Length: 308
Image (cartoon, rainbow, N blue to C red; front, side):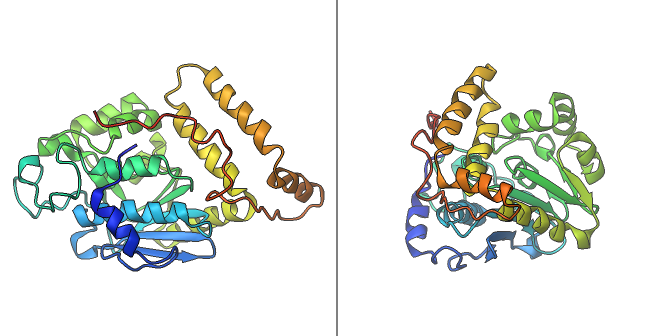
């Protein structure tokens, strides 16, 4: 997991209470009825990411994880684009780490900044739904990969354009992408750097489904409401992490070890009793477990990874 960014520690102390939007200039943070809508908000730049937006995204995911009122996160873009990748307006040395145009304490000089966002998403306790409303290139594409459910507008397209810019795929996407769509699609998209239609992405499994622009966010909210209304927060957090973390396991026994501990510990909880009672009584469940305080003692079961 990426180490916390030094300047974000200060930002966290100044941020609004969970649910608020104070402190965000390039991201909209809006919570309604248990659903956080996180909107990339630089529409005049097609939501291209700069170091400030990167930091705000990490802060927003920290805030979402700490807030038990946030049950599901939806990520989308303002205006006609989802995210046009890196903001290259600083010029030809944008990716020259020795000439970074940002405060010296923002992020370790030797590390790719996109990984700060995707690795934070990888460890999130809340499910993430991507609502890709328009073009998503570069970081706009790699940013999608740690999301759990991805929906695309018929107007969306994406591109892993790094080879066309003389750099490499970033944000840990070489780990995520082949696991999601397979090595054949990943190689095609990355080596050519071509723009890909949302239809092709859906057929390859990058997107769960394709929607008319007006239907995209409503569908994302319907899925989010299904999770919010019927699933236990602790169960969701554990199942999300089981699936992501087990992608790297070398044998199904590793999953069996963890899910056995999970079943043994969660089976004793009020949420497990409520899950059964609500089923038998044919009513909606009212789960009381909170991810901020009630995660089982074996969580996390993995060792944090350092950059070394």
